[in-house]
Amino acid sequence: MAETLAEFYEELKDCQRCSLGKTRTNIVFGAGSENADLVFVGEAPGRNEDMQGKPFVGAAGQLLDKLLNSIGLERSQVYIANVLKCRPPQNRDPLPDEIEICKPFLLKQIKIIGPKVVCTLGRFATQVILDKNASISKVRGKRFDGNGYYIFPIYHPAAALYQRTNIVNLKADFLKLKEILSEKTIEEPSHQEEEPEQLMLF
Image (cartoon, rainbow, N blue to C red):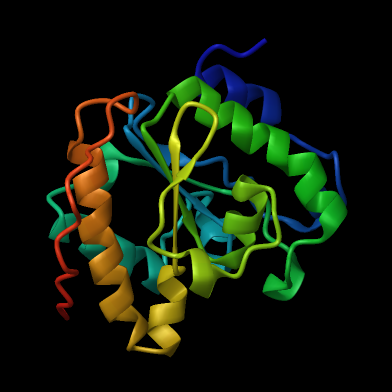
């Protein structure tokens, strides 16, 4: 029974539980601080991630780094993982059986880390973590109670690369994320009225 992320990685690194084990280059376990207050969850590795074995190393990852920097955080202070640990061929959508097999691994990572906030990036990650068929446009920027942590869905950074107006929403949601992280404890949420969103571009 893995007690640390390193031990858990050793258990999973040669995973062949679904067909993706035969087509991947590298398993993309996750990266970051095991003591992080903030965990980001994406959908699945892409080509760059599959080649390097690290999450969010392409253009979307660079944007995520900028958004983190905008609220005073570095990538090394958070943890980044995906619903799937292996790249689906041609970056197709994850299949239900792949999600079912991989979801417990993600939940175990979250349990080991014990974060304050799990920030889901995009529709797939949000639906998996919220465990319901939610529209990302309707739930983004809202806080939900998870299993000992808050769930905070936002648009996937890749969506802003294709539609630049989404950067405004991402920037605003990261400001909300900063407020949530600054609260003292999850048991004592702030009851102050939210200030109007500051909509800023980089």
